[in-house]
Figure 1 (tube, rainbow, N blue to C red):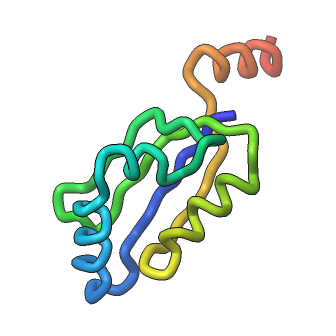
Figure 2 (cartoon, rainbow, N blue to C red):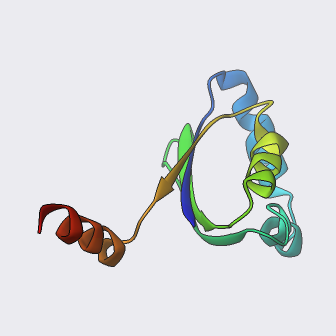
Length: 97
């Protein structure tokens, strides 16, 4: 399944802590931050750095929860299942005929 993880820094005083931790992660650690059961599709950050989102694929709710827990001391994270256009069109056609 694919998921959108949306994050917000609720406390501006933790933003630099988050930037520092993220910025210092080596490429291998960055890719592996979610663990072997999660495939990162892409990640985007707002220009101000206050929020961002990523899209990932996983069949493991445990792995997703663990990844979010890595960051939830400084971020508010919302996790939402999502579908690509083709899959959503198929659902819409099935539902509406």
